Amino acid sequence: STFDGDHLLVKATDEPAARGFLGEAGHTLL
Image 1: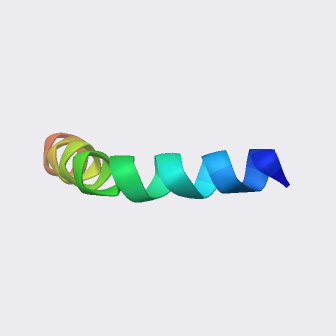
Image 2 (image 1 turned 45 degrees about the horizontal axis):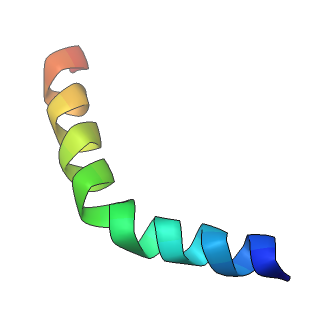
């Protein structure tokens, strides 16, 4: 579906930034 395609594209595009954000949040919280 179009939604699935967009979701995968967004996931692939945002993954590095998301990992960086989660990594920073993890260090802050833990």
